[in-house]
Length: 281
Image (cartoon, rainbow, N blue to C red):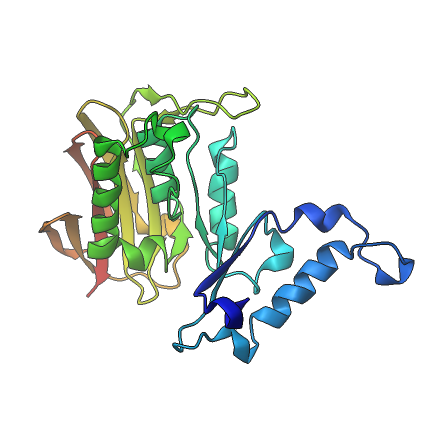
């Protein structure tokens, strides 16, 4: 396929579904299940044919990858529509260093809260912006498209070293009792667990910088108080930091010699985010 179509990427849909088939080829019946899929991908990944004729690396993507396929996939499609947000959090903590993930949204799930929570979990997506079943028409919804562009600009400006290349840490602590945001339901009809209007995530970059994100998922501005204590994050070492608040197009130094503790209040407009960044002095 790579040589015939000179492609830049391959997507193997639902790779793990056949994992319930027997994995022993000596049994004589069709299909080798999970072991066969793993073996096929292992051939693709390191093989010289994985380089296209233009010399670009071939990206291998899949869905329902599970642990058996770490090391064979570059990026995996995840639904991230579980009823309990803790399960989504744990999944990213365990696997984020090994595999990039991207997601998509269902019609039954509110777009902004769903996509926003994916974003702060370090997930690319969604992939189906132009899907009429998702947006209710043949053309992309401009508000939703603007939101995706905004998130992409934030990712490029200050987010990528954390959300996509960093390691997940404990969340900062929100001290304000905030309203809850509906996340819709799964296709099975099970309701997803509501989320607070302000959501957070914290990350450690490869260079040791710490980034704490805050996003307003509600339709109204939200004022809130929060606390960040780096001693909760089990870092290898602590020191003194320059603390900067980063927004799209604007950086503000909050502290120039901080011991790694911030307790303050702030306000966020609807569907906006900011980053509190700790850079060791």
